[in-house]
Image (tube, rainbow, N blue to C red; front, side, top):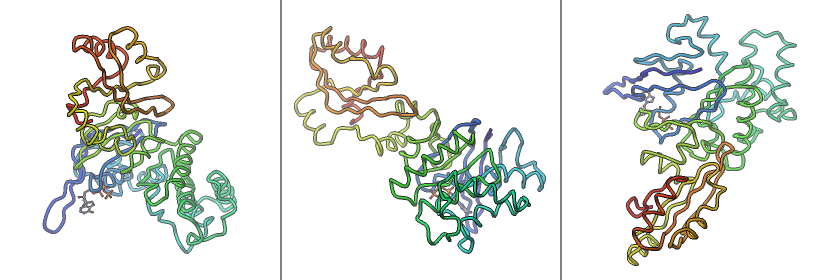
Amino acid sequence: MITFENVTKVFQTKDREVAAVKDVCLTVKEGEIFGIIGFSGAGKSTLLRLVNLLEKPTSGKIFVNRQEITKLSTKELRKLRQNIGMIFQNFNLFNSRTVFGNVEYPLKIAQVPKEERKRIVWELLRFVGLEDKAGDYPEQLSGGQKQRVGIARALATSPKILICDEPTSALDPETTNDILNLLKKVNRELNVTILLITHEMHVIRKICDRVAVMEEGRIIEEGSVLDIFTSPKTRTTKNFIRSVIHDSLSESLLEELKRNGTNHLYRLTFKGDATKQPILSRISKRYNVDVNILNGNISELQGQLFGNLIVEIIGDGQEVKRVIEELKKVVQVKEVLSDAG
Ligand SMILES: Nc1ncnc2c1ncn2[C@@H]1O[C@H](COP(=O)(O)OP(=O)(O)OP(=O)(O)O)[C@@H](O)[C@H]1O
């Protein structure tokens, strides 16, 4: 639905050039929620703004619904923008308009007749749960309510794509959860494809189907959320995951284990069915080893279970080797002391 082909964006400032997006290739499929995560300055906002041509690419091609957007006429571009809703971290509401007036605004621009506008606005206010706030002004609303207005306004022209610029960064955890649930509802019930940027991994974990990790203008890793969480490849991705899944051993415990000569320490990553099998008890019955669990958790991701365990396998070296071979048939196994947890 959205495709980036070798897209680069260079900003020319007075004294230097800043390459904000570098040679990005990316495809967002119809119907999915795609997240882009990265630290501040990674180029996420620029990438997002390229989708509706708020920024023009310096080189490369961008396709939305198979149309190459830099080739569109002014009229076609206006139509494209009506098909792409956008929400912002700071909501960007019109303070001088009521909630109703904010949601109605894009419909006025699109010259939708008054009665039709009214019908659509009420329908959207119902959808986002703000019917009782129609006459209020933004300053009378909480952050979460403001973002609901932002979402309703972005949906007014029935776009098939919604792009979200850090939609929950200004919100507390509980409100964040509500807004993410609402975005999921937009995606599932209205069949709107969502592209969002964030620096918070819990946002990715909660609603995204796929994710790309961005660093210094480049996509450094991309995949389904389950794959990225269970097999992260880059240090940056691992650090993002550690921000939501606290599954590493403390430095002091690691030091103590090293001092005690522990050398058979492994991280086991379970996906899907493997989480339901009594793998460890089977192993210790079948082989002459003991298994000591040092850390563990199971999470749910996009309806699938995945778990992490850090275990010490106590036994003779050859026997431990055989156990590892057996474990590798069902779960991912990685030595821990070699990568410091
Ligand atoms: N209009 C501009 N002119 C010059 N440089 C820019 C412009 N917009 C962005 N940049 C630079 O491009 C780089 C990427 O910025 P961008 O805002 O896309 O990153 P980001 O990942 O969204 O970060 P943040 O989360 O802090 O907004 C930064 O170095 C930024 O300073």
